[in-house]
Amino acid sequence: MAKVLVVIGLAIAAAGAAMWLGLPLGRLPGDIVVRRGAFSFAFPLTTCVLLSVVITVLLALFRR
Image (cartoon, rainbow, N blue to C red; front, top):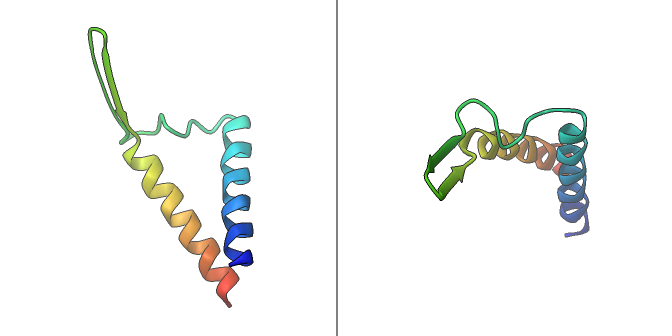
C-alpha cells in the first residue's frame, strides 16, 4: 500500500511540474468544452486518458 501511495504522489507531483512548465493539461486537443451563455461544461477526455496511461506505466514499474 505504501508503494502505491508513493507512486500516486509522484504522479501528482509530475502533473503539477508539467503544468508549471507549460504543458496545458486540461486544455489538450480532444478535451471537450461546451460554453453556452452563463453555462460552461468541461470534460478533459484526452487529459484523463493520458494520466491513466502514465499512472498505469508507473504502477507496472513499481510492481516489479
